Image (cartoon, rainbow, N blue to C red; front, side, top):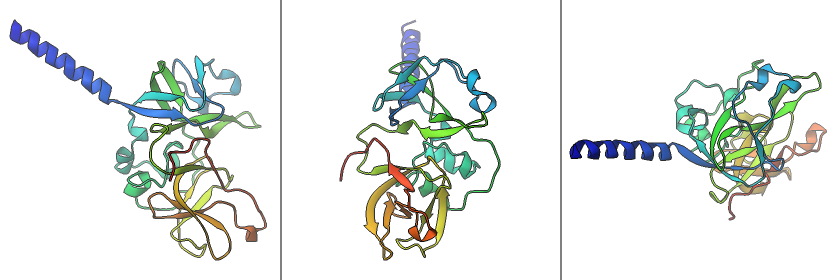
Length: 242
């Protein structure tokens, strides 16, 4: 009986530890906050009026604990057949040891597939479900992916800046500082990219180096195209300092 009680205690402790290990630190990175619902639903199949009432809205810079999910895991993504346009927008690109580091760079496939919404299960500071992006309302009533609302990791993780793509057509990542260098891949609008360096190239354009050191991206669109506007903006949360 004593041995049985000891075994039961050991099993319970193991289950408790595995439960603890199955969560990760995230934080709210969107100035509008992060909406929490009691249950998941499919926004892609709904109209604006069909969206359920939320439980709460967590403010900017709130630390949250979420259950781990293969959809957000770099290692799992590396071994999946998930196309680039199906990767969660909150997956920070360009990180050393991250998604881009484990997959071959390529151009995203042309697709008319509907947007993919990804859910995270929150366990602290309250229990519920959050989308990793806002729900964007189109003029025709359709719903699409909006800006990201959460980031993986605590607020003080690393010593890099995270930028978000604001250009409607996305942003090109090239292999070198100059625009003549080869095109590696394209980031979707609202995608996140981690940056470690900012330099001016021969054309006088501000170029940003990805944190993994493998690519460069323009801070603004090339003025030779006839348009001068931002391609990226820093997110409201900065990770540490240099």
